[in-house]
Image 1 (tube, helix red, strand yellow):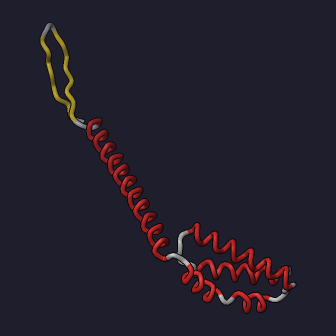
Image 2 (cartoon, one colour):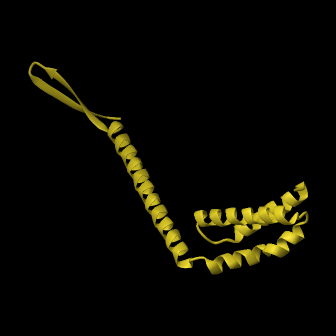
Image 3 (cartoon, rainbow, N blue to C red):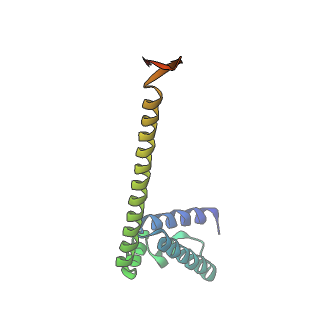
Length: 133
């Protein structure tokens, strides 16, 4: 395979991958199958030009459209919704944790820089005087 054909195929596969609207696992499996089919086609037919490959397999738009026709859209939507719920939950937990840490720092800061009393014990009497810092 020539360098030019390899570059054209890389751009072709990238275009197809960008057009696929599905979860990462399904996309990776489909792209792996497509690349294997193209490699097998190149070896069997001794193809040296990109146009032959594109005419045999179709344009990236045609490939993505055929993928969507043969794929369970409801299953993909369900997987994507689950991922959104998990992501939202994780972000909520992180936000609550950050707010807790900020509140703790504020509380520690006000306690350590606030008002305190100093006392002197003298002959059984406790003399106190407040000092503010």
